[in-house]
Image (cartoon, rainbow, N blue to C red; front, side, top):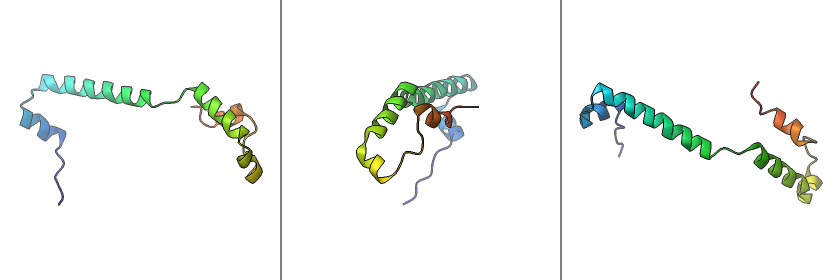
Length: 81
């Protein structure tokens, strides 16, 4: 059974919100979304430690040589230019 997804406009109309409420809803949604993303991001130090741990794994080194020799070399590819 397929259910219809309610649009924002339908939700606003159904709940009886006015134009001044729409801005408040939008701002709260943006704030919650930004917090959600920020809580799930890794710091550079977290990534440095993960890189270090991967280099210490003997199975990895035996089966396949590392692609990047240093953390800085690996990390450079993810920096915003």
